[in-house]
Image (cartoon, rainbow, N blue to C red):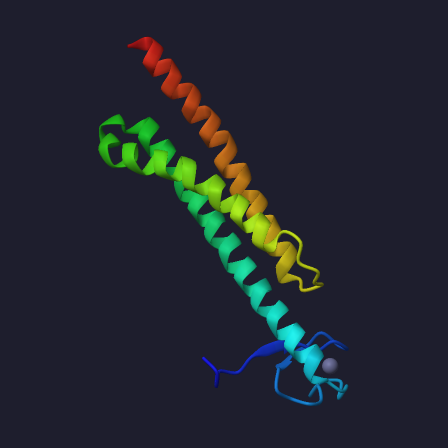
Length: 144
Ligand SMILES: [Zn+2]
């Protein structure tokens, strides 16, 4: 892990550069070590925030698709009866965890607002599906 190239954004022109370089190869601005370390750490956090949020959005999307399948094909139920409750609980836990870990990053990296949008998309997928699903479960319980 140590010899892998760390990429940061130049503090002057925001182009991606090698974190070990002393001068930006785009604008030739001076890059000091402290700035580089802070920027590299921030870049890693933004990357993690972006990847986690993307994963959350995809997970919430899968959750919504599974819920719809469950609705259309009730006999498909056995697998979805396990997966849905797990995701019903796990997704909001992971959404909150993302918020705690990455909710207050001070960065102008454009990947960060993208990550936040994916986070919101995950919430907007999870919430209505879960509410609809709960109502449906309650109705089925009453119906039986
Ligand atoms: Zn630069």
